[in-house]
Image (cartoon, rainbow, N blue to C red; front, side, top):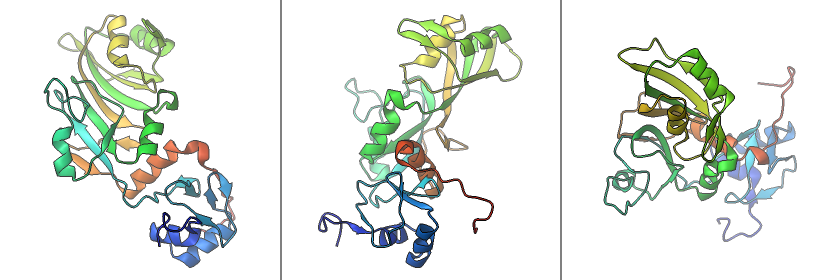
Length: 262
């Protein structure tokens, strides 16, 4: 019987066991130790029932994926591909990957057509809404090749804040990678702003237009060696870390003492 057929939900132990966390008996032990929470509250009642589609369950502060039908995919978006499932202008878009993925998934946020790198796609609508919302402030790491010799003073500008037409934007972290050469510099920028084309606009504003831009990290996800145009499903650990970020306002973070059992 699924949750739709059972308005009272399913026993928490059964749901977590099915999700691969541990056996039901082990889950009961974790509950007794106060290491399981539901919607931010410690769950110790052994008869507790939950709804896997709506409740947020965490173990030791890590959110557990309970939606068995959910897909979480990492794509290395190449330059020249639009971050849309169906581009009205007929340009190459993300729709070309759906047949291969075998699921209708949606992109979390966007990369402009001239930017390559990590783009996440999923059919988990609630996670998409949370991670893509401008107020959520997911950290992103970019590597930019820019025109000219970017100096330490330029890095200071990026960190202090750059005045743009829609307000001030500043990097959380910024550093030069190697010495400038052949009229170009390479800079790594970390920021959480969701403003459109913000990295390109910041660098142009300080006199260093972007020649090439690449995103290699989105929150806890790292692109690694995934080749341009390739995709893969996230690992269980990656999904857990991503959902923990997405539902951080619904998670009770429990600090385990030194005397806790391993």
